[in-house]
Length: 169
Image 1 (cartoon, helix red, strand yellow):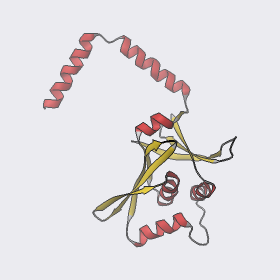
Image 2 (cartoon, one colour; image 1 turned 90 degrees about the vertical axis):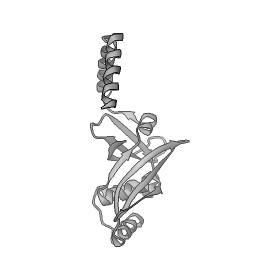
Image 3 (cartoon, rainbow, N blue to C red; image 1 turned 45 degrees about the vertical axis):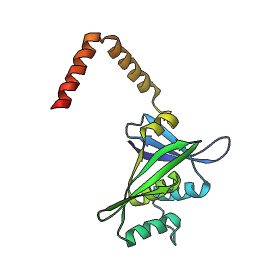
Image 4 (cartoon, one colour; image 1 turned 180 degrees about the horizontal axis):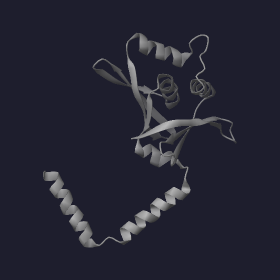
């Protein structure tokens, strides 16, 4: 899993649909997630620390967590199926830990209100992320190609034997 942060909200130029943009810690990959207008407003409100006069849905959920002495440990965006992202809330109450199914937009809105971490599975990043730093990606590819081109079969055998030794200890 890769920890991500909300980098901001944008509008799709063609559809005018809001997009939440998540970025990894090193700002090499970005994950765009299309959301509804209401969820975008809620996420934007949380990013700007805006407190509504009455609790909105995500605020109500946070109030329920607090009232029942529960904490949101983190959210996990765990899969992408037919262009739809899936997420869970990881909630703890004492020793009890539960996963609660959620839309990523709702999970992000709640995570921002509780200062909880946002995690994305590597497979989702591989399938749906966009590169932010193409130069760094290319430099990494070149370094890997150089590493591979300098390996000999005996190097691989030595590495394999070292791994076997480490596993038996």
